[in-house]
Length: 187
Ligand SMILES: [Zn+2]
Image 1 (cartoon, protein in one colour):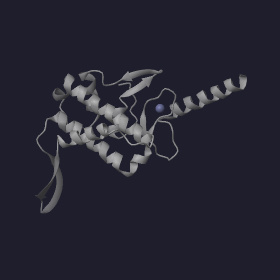
Image 2 (spheres, rainbow, N blue to C red):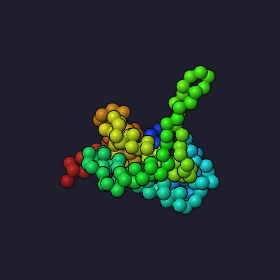
Image 3 (cartoon, rainbow, N blue to C red):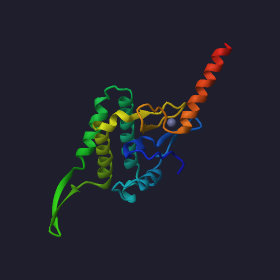
Image 4 (cartoon, rainbow, N blue to C red):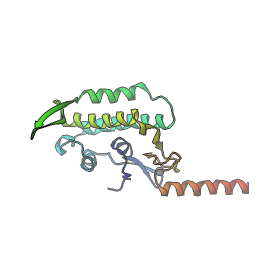
């Protein structure tokens, strides 16, 4: 698998299945088989057979588009479109998770259980809820769109001032800036 995996939280990893290679846009979720391959890298509750169809692929791609819009809005410190927020709410509601109390070995244990839903619904809901937690939590302020030339990736910045998803993008940005300055000096 050649697309960038940056150890990002799942919702960002999903958005980053659209990436650029040598300035060309690439899509790691172009076919149902590609979705299968991606899902196997995650711990989403989804069986391969469920995911291998065009409808499931389209649903994941729709969620991915909404997440891109949401993360871009947050990176720009703007309010996202209502439709993108509502998609997350709808996907979450389609596969509710309830708290469960169990008594085992003389001790109470808390677990959660998914209410009846298809595994595609459950997987989409799981990504949607991870995105909700990220967007409404303290890490939201660390969501960045990479400023690397031609790069379309999103990432969580470890430091407040970090504009690049990777050292490679940082280098490309520095080279581009140097080139621009050099050109400006020549004109
Ligand atoms: Zn980048």
